[in-house]
Length: 184
Image 1 (cartoon, rainbow, N blue to C red):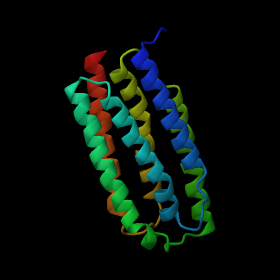
Image 2: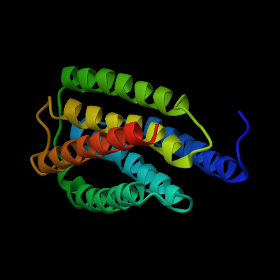
Image 3: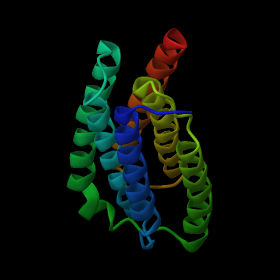
């Protein structure tokens, strides 16, 4: 498929953001706290979503998609602030080796699935459509990571943050799927 100059610019930025996120998330040194491990991996995940949304806003004229992107930026900026504010407290929550291994195995599967689906997301000359095909697996990854962490006894201050991630990103996935259906 022949891509426009803008599509090439957008896709180049997307793959750079994806590579940076994957590198940062997979280089986290796991310690004895599921809560801290989650935060250390979710921070670069959220920062990538913000960058992806900012990149989309350079190109899209679709008001619904602009609103979705602005919402992602707002919600995930707040979520980053919330996680950073509890990180020191949550790092003190220690988990046993068995739970850490269960968490890590499931989390690794979630991340590998997300990275694979984001890399092979359908790209086309519609930056709007490409963005949604890329952001949906990104959101699904965050949902999976949060649901996995909630299976364990984590820092109580982190629980409402995870609930918020799940709620907001499920809503975002629904909005993008509806918009994709309308545009394709």
